[in-house]
Image 1 (cartoon, rainbow, N blue to C red):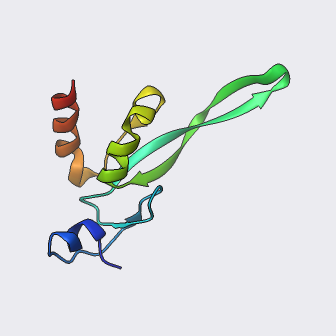
Image 2 (image 1 turned 120 degrees about the horizontal axis):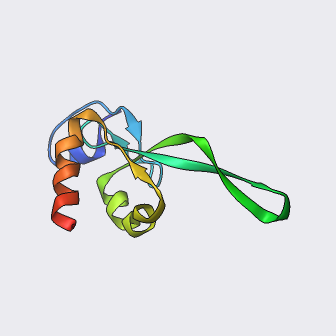
Length: 94
């Protein structure tokens, strides 16, 4: 499978992940890895965040579209190939 973002730019790179939201194939450069809190509810509707987080991937387009939602309650980590790019985005938006 070929990375959708690379294909749009006229390149051909193998995909390593699928976007959780739109299912686009992504290479390691375009795959953003996020950690998602896992919660459970106990008696009397008490919501507890469990210590381990789930992992999921997003493309840059979906990340930007959903950003206001994720910025409030999700930690972000990136694949090694995109660490600098994401840090630049955060600095520009701050």
